[in-house]
Length: 129
Length: 237
Image: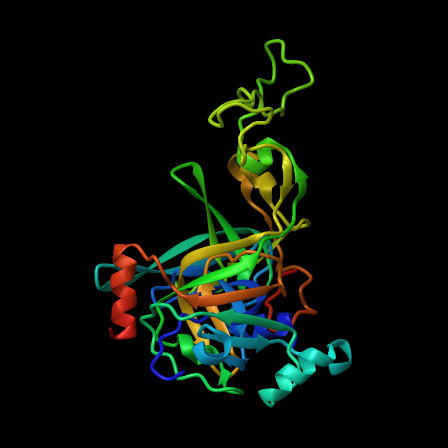
């Protein structure tokens, strides 16, 4: 076996296979496992997915939300076992791969266009006219 | 050879780096090394060779790319010619090592109980480098009248310094020169995982050299206190 196949074999078991389809601009819930002492609880971080980078085991997602009128961005390793699950709350229309321009936006212009329009071709997706 | 404790390295190939999540969900950077299998190609004894040692061979090699002396030498151990050979002398070891016999195969399971290993490799060659990159010198100021010598090493002291009198600076004076492509040992790397089926060992952190480079792995020596205790516990000594 070649070297890449071996390394991918090591990574394979650690990859999540229950990650829903998440596109840039979608509002998502990230359920983080928080360990306090010997107790574990789930904390939900909701925000807009503004960037995905890396591949395979190294894939990172960046989620931006507004807390008390200031932006908070968190970067998560997509395959981290400390994340219980992902949920897509709202799908939105984004025309670029990195939504860093949202950092400069204020007020209502922070919102992204709803992308439920014209999604008939994607299976299992609700549409509005 | 029975009864003699050897400090033995195994030879392997650095495959590359990735990450592994441990039980706490913490991402651990690991280097994947394909270690062994190594074959004992010669057992040297006091009577015959004047000293005790064991020689191991590693790596596939087409016989037509080898030489007759090597083919013949490895044939005595009943094996195909190996690409690399290394010899190890007796030394103190806390690991349980098997008695060595000619033709015996050694694999990664040798390190199963080890908590820490040392990895030796040949670092990537950097070519001819100046004092700033090679020895972390500070260079000269960017401004205040400095002209055309911003990265120069500065004074190298008097010729006679610390050497009595003479026309040359002291040996080992740190200057520009060839950097990298030398034998480097990284000590006390944690063993994260061992895959006996594929002959892999995963160690925490980087190891010297490029991917597919030859590395030596041996039990961790010169561990500092807390690591030393863990190593002893792991080895059950």
